[in-house]
Length: 417
Image 1 (cartoon, rainbow, N blue to C red):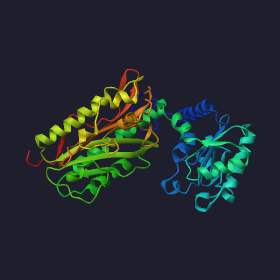
Image 2: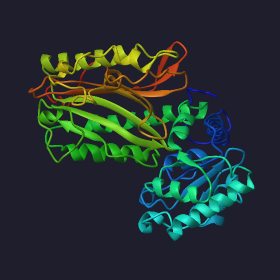
Image 3: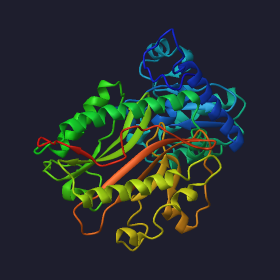
Image 4: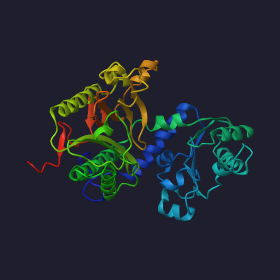
């Protein structure tokens, strides 16, 4: 495919995202991982894994109710339960023809035990499908429900072994397909429009919440299907590190860090931090910015196929005292990395806390997409700097997916120049 295209519309003159291939390859990765893990089937209520397996989009208003779930046997196709009006869903999603069924209830709102009518109705329906595919004697993975313990007990009463299914789906999603990677490039490009709009709006009197709204508006203009709140902190709110925005107005000389976090295009997320200055920055602010940028790029320099998550963290400060704290738990988010894709935080986790606790290292593999983020700020000081890049792991290093300029602290609102 043309990895430099980045176009979003369907055209006849070049190959862009191939959605039929995207669905086929994601589904095959899930089946392959189920076979490796010895699962006969998986049932998931997780909206991300529902999308990964079927491409069905669960709107935010429906996610906590757990009305929708997908069942998939290792040797068959996925079944969607609760997909709106089934016939209409099948018309819009013909690859799901004959496998979309009405909701079987909302046990999350009613169930108190494993004998609840709604839970047993779901378990019975899944049991019949497992028998149809000849996997009723094999374990089923349960994923994405707050009632996992009750469903596990209910399956047990039917003679079906239920186990934790999330690790299987996490592992399946670990390596991105070519079309997933192209979608990650697009969502990072969308973040750049948000930063451009935000940078134009930074001036005295503009509030943190205003900048969040401006950024979200730009993302939806680019076709995002969802976005989380952006992180936006300014002035004294940048030190110590925090996530929340407020109605604080921007003032001359303030640093402002912003994370276009959880901005979702076709389900695929961006997580990109940049730091700006309102007006002319001081040399101390520039030095702090370079401290953060150098830290980030030192970690990125260790990224390549065959390296480990600990090769990355070993490029970062080896003591929480660097930030003025006593334990790694206090500074857990200060220098971290994580996988990113259909969720904001995929595997692997990249943190010194895990290394200090003795977790085994995780091998980085070509095709993983990572978000790496660092923070610089002196304890008790006014200013803090946060920066983050999204990278695709390659055979000999990485491809940089996030392109907003990072080489120096960007000064906004300079009427006196």
